[in-house]
Length: 130
Image 1 (cartoon, one colour):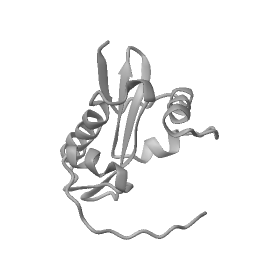
Image 2: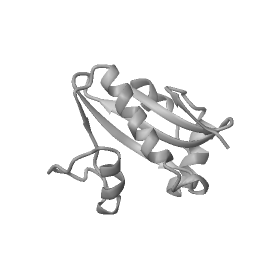
Image 3: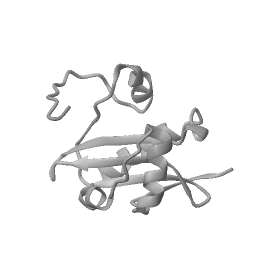
């Protein structure tokens, strides 16, 4: 099966919510339009017309961009789709004027993000909501 990577596909909420349910275990339905319309870029991975992977690139309106929500449907993991999503997101961000691409991740994802080309840095975090 061929996987197609699409820049800024603006997936329907149904497709996004289905992917979120499978990839993250999310149970709450969301409206993704407000997030995607403010993004610098986003990339969808499709198996035929089915959304099976996604990554969002948020930004500060200047030179800093941020990888968010990288996910791949469990049936399609361990095939390099996540790495390709992030690399395509980086290419788009660079082409749209970003100088820096940031990502925050849990320790068990360090190998994945290193494979995507990220180097470790120190950062800080404040939890605003429980």
